[in-house]
Image (cartoon, chains in turn orange, red):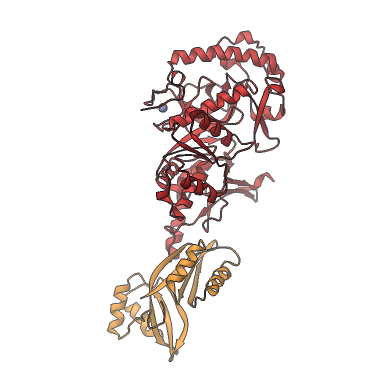
Length: 142
Length: 432
Ligand SMILES: [Zn+2]
């Protein structure tokens, strides 16, 4: 299980640069980032190497946050690499709320972040296909 | 038990109060006739002389004064005494044009401070208390009024004025403030700051007297819970004297009007007809003891209801409801009356802070209404669907309350400037 931090983003130029700047100033390594937005505001979702430290720093900065456990799954970094995982979702009729990828690529693997409402069911189904989600330790996340 | 500053006045019989009002009104009309040519002319235009006013039953004959009169008569036109008998002015910003300047003799200041002393004792204040006055000092009446009242009660008075939150909290904790006097929005802000700094168990506050601004019942509950106090309302306006024209008692069901100094009427704002007690309408005050600025039948623009129901506190003076809207604050958007207090109520019910800003504009000859609202951790989530559905609930609730669509703009916390005096809640771009 990996912790994702979501931050409320106002529709204001430079806000994203401001947040990533704060992370950089505090030597926090950003491992993945995705933004969902409306015309008025957005939700910045990210995976960092030190979630607790990041949370404290951003809270002090007055940002609105929420923490969500997400699944990170390693897939072969090649055409069609994602197919087995997505087929599993289809097989269980499990909806995806959102997904995005980690910057990290190692040993021919890419890493996908999944947020699904029926997480336990998803994990159980993945196991039947011999797929196990990555732990925070494996990914070097604190 | 209830404590009164002037028990013989505050619990006087209704007959006694009427007798005071009859006698003082007659005297006051003569005083104004003799000394305020501006008002005398208004009386003459209606064919009135002081002899026509034999008591409160004749009050309805007298002409009204409005904020426009105050502007027209600025600065000395409504002065009732020689200027060298005055010892003080206070002033309030008008929405447009000239400021209102009110004058006080020493006697006026004394009576005003008595009214504030009644308010402080009504919330349980006595000479053992430390009264923390965080209303602005200066031209604004808030600071001076409560300061004077606090002296009269014999409280240790902390003349903090507004602003410098660090200093406010330092004195509050170090000197053990027990009664806080400020605007409700500043009280809410101080409450937040106290929680953020973990000072909650270091404060000794027991009561707060909050006025000069509209606030809802929900905001009262939030402040009471946040500070662990009872939060009381106080009402007043510079034109009439300042805070303490009326004040809340322990019953917290309306504000007792100091009827030995002010006669209250409720009128229909359109027809100017006097309405029976219990009707909703515009509040009108006649000052019957003031010397320097003796306004008769001054239209406050506040919409409220009077009540003469007996009060468990023992005070016999009638009560007024919290103003339900102020025609000065009232916005007409797409032909619909919109009161900021309605928006505040919805925000609090939906779990958003009462710190908001209303922006009205006109686009292609059509009015637009936008409400800037601060996002909260409770309403935020990683799911866009959840956040947009919370937002939609808020839009729907606003529509249900106001009858028109208001666009909601969610912003980061502390984006909307916190007032340390009166809050700037409305930006009406149509006036440009
Ligand atoms: Zn009472």
